[in-house]
Length: 375
Length: 92
Image (cartoon, rainbow over all chains, first blue to last red; front, side, top):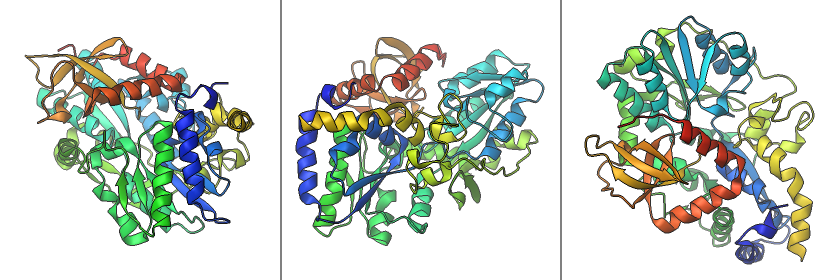
């Protein structure tokens, strides 16, 4: 196996782990939420939980954009894709996400033209090359990808590409963190803040976490040492009785974010009054839609969509996993009925989903890591 | 999709100031640099790329360690690079 033993900074990780252990109050249980799915991936891939004292648990948050898309929105997207003359373009991660009536792969089997793209600009290129088709980009993601969608729409407007539109499902991270802090039954001690979202929004928007909830947050990078460092800094704040926003990822994340990216989002998009999140339910002001002045590029205004709320399958517990209430392996269908090949829930689809990350790496690593760290 | 990939700028396209040619793990592509307005970019600079757009300028040491890390995560990075390779974006 290729976990700690091959991991180049294992020595530093162990040293950091020792300092972490030294900061823990005996008998106290600590829970830190890593908001971002990229961190979840790192944690399982490198078996980081096994470096931590038993008292510390890492709780996986809602920061996986594919995971939080509710079934009803997948159905809406598939309904658009099924209309005549439509080419639907989306990121590869979305292809296997199950809706109430199958996934995009099923829709393709029924004849829908769905194309995987790397960038919204690829979708715009498809529109340019196919003037007789209506090309719809299914946009998902947090503030990391929203500026790219916005720039692409501005580009379409300036070039006058009339057969291009966007089915916008961009969500914003702050209301989701608030919803988690307000949800009963989950007592968190602090947060590992998302790295790449923060390159756009900066660190200021997190100030309510210490300010209103009295909890620390440390924005962190994606390497194993970054995540351990964030745990260490959270613990240090707790030990010293502080609660602050700290930026461990200053080498990439400016304190004020990327002003141009924020301006572009604001030019093209505005907050929706409500948006449904898988697992978290409806959250006010938590997602983006196109402004009136870009209405001609808004697939929701161009196409009729069912717009129905579809309940998750009964067996699926993605909601609990996304809120951090359940660990992936505690879900009833984890690894049996629900696998990356035949996912029931979204958390098993995306590589940033907690279930897929645990299925692919975590379940193999625990014992072996323990063994490796003992020697 | 959420992975930020470091790329080294090899050419700023003079006729298209919003585009730059970058090298990402040996794959050369045009990417959009419009979100880094006001940040002077030149060949040899490194940027972090998300879905075809440079979102932040980084130093070379950070780029190298991010690349080492991405290579270590395997499949997810390979998928991202394959998607980037197939990406048409704009040919300037």
